[in-house]
Length: 150
Image 1 (cartoon, rainbow, N blue to C red):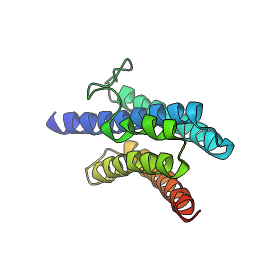
Image 2 (cartoon, rainbow, N blue to C red):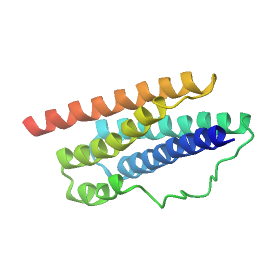
Image 3 (cartoon, one colour):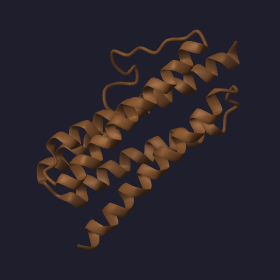
Image 4 (cartoon, rainbow, N blue to C red):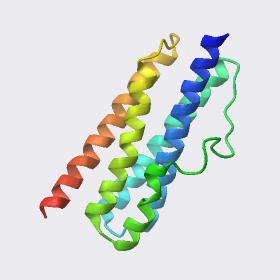
């Protein structure tokens, strides 16, 4: 039973990081003026919503549910809080830095999850989502680096 609790806690933590990312990217897509970033942030918000659904489906298969109303760990994770002020400043580099910081937490959560003994169907899903999160992180970092050079 303890192992099931650990798996549930791990999946719940990933869901929370995805919720944070979805909310952060949704906010960014609404407030950023750069069309390329607006489209990219919308894409990542939809991606995270899809990942949440996938993880919630896995919980359901394990006989668990996720509280969809709000995060038990609080509202948006600290990593995304400074995004709003960066958006207000209209500083592309700063917005990308804040998004990358949020992605750092997501990447870390997925790495930690993959270190655990995940059951059969869950492991390949978490592995694929990790690749997607890492890819998003690296893309955001690359855009941030370009903005620093500009």
